Length: 231
Image (cartoon, rainbow, N blue to C red; front, top):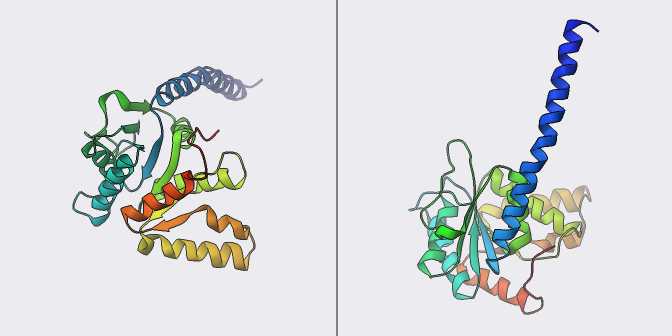
């Protein structure tokens, strides 16, 4: 074997060894998340842009939505950072309810916001572990205007419900002016023109513009179903 081939072979073995050991860290994050989140009780997750400033109408709306959610007996889970996440935790804090932050270290934008309950701030290294915690322990997703991360959470939840990998729960898009164009495209392109989804898939999400709209959707859903983890 040439020196170059030997070095490549050695490097590949080192990668495989590191990957194997990483499994223990991944498992520890799952155990940590499950143990902490299972103690918290029914919550609704609020997603949205980390870049939304406190003077923006959607920051203020997210705060009111979170307050209303708490008043109706749920806690609030966010990604723990600034922007809409901060607004969600702020609303829960102002209403005296459970305020959870699932934090992850990201360049430029992620830092813990001050409205998370001190005993309910969880830190994760892996995006996929963190997303499992959102999906498993949320009784609903309230999705405010956001960027790629928000869209990632939204479409993963839709896909998991569509494919029956998890139980159905409410997915509520807040801000029809923001979301209408995207879901017009979903209806006309994915459904009507290309038949890449089924007609019933459109109804996996609902649109809302006020905090009262959000609560109405949650209440109507849980008048029919029990509160429980989603898988």
